[in-house]
Image (cartoon, rainbow, N blue to C red; front, side, top):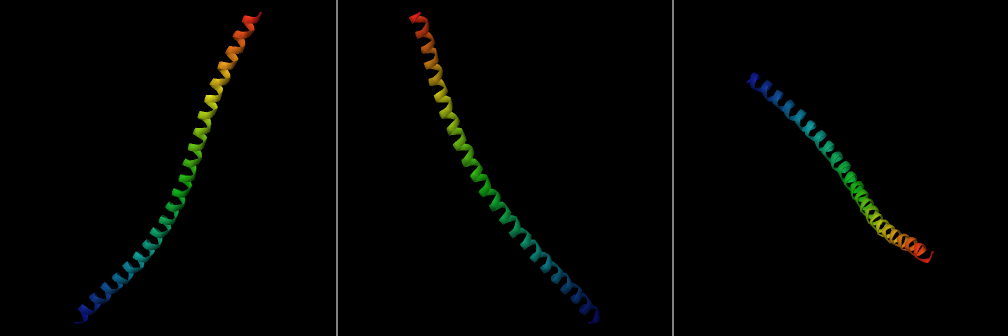
Length: 82
């Protein structure tokens, strides 16, 4: 009977240790989830900024083509009127 009691106490200590370890792991998982949520939010904001910048760059390219065409036309007009 005494041997069974000792084994039971050891198993009880193991269960107690594993419960503490589980609680610690849950806290770590919660912290990781919070960090991931913050990173996801930051990434979404960064992607939105990059998309806006891409749109602005496309507009700049379109305006640059217009300026280039107008400059070529002006150069042609200068030659024509000379």
